[in-house]
Image (cartoon, rainbow, N blue to C red; front, top):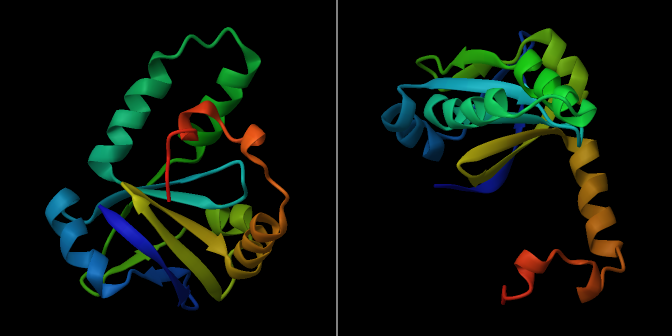
Length: 150
């Protein structure tokens, strides 16, 4: 289980150094074998290889007669890229994926239990501001969250 967020810098080659607290668990869980792909919110998703394999199996089994399903498969599977954590805990984010997410020097890595999101720092800040300033009421929340008490 990965939790928390960090602001990190990409180096000149497009490498992201994963925070030290994630390196050991990632080495144990997947021997540093990870998969990067895109998300329609404009960020990248980073999965330990075993977690990605479950998602991949689900995606390829979906009947693709519906256009939205085909688009989702194309986006997630078509951009999926295997990456490996090096001895310094870094992963290389390919130029195509950096461009998709608008990643420059300063990025935000958000740990969400079984995966990570990688955001352009300014886009992350905007999304958080939008959330904080939104006027959500309980009627807009999905029914699955009705019983959640924070």
